[in-house]
Length: 155
Image (cartoon, rainbow, N blue to C red; front, side, top):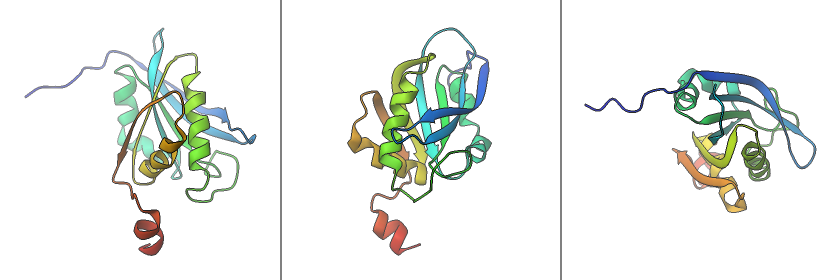
């Protein structure tokens, strides 16, 4: 059976990296990246659950060790980030601003992809129509496509 790719890099972690949104709010992210010179593609996850919670799954270390910058951001009004949290309301605008911010980081190569499940997938559905210039792909998993029917009405 194939073993898959092997880690090529040690992982460097930066906690609570600030990203300024267009309305002046600051959202904070943890950044996992290859501990090496060069510029790498970015994988972005934006969530309301607390960026510390998502690290239990271990994907950030897997991808960073294989040449990706992984950014896990607390959404507006959640945990370390500023502002008020209103589910789904600010995700499109904040997602756009975060993609463009991530693309300009000194260790990023300008190509940003998004990934995540459930609410993290919904943030991608809301982001996509805004068409950030540096967004190259999205990988939403198990996310509701009809927010009223799947979330508001049933939950």
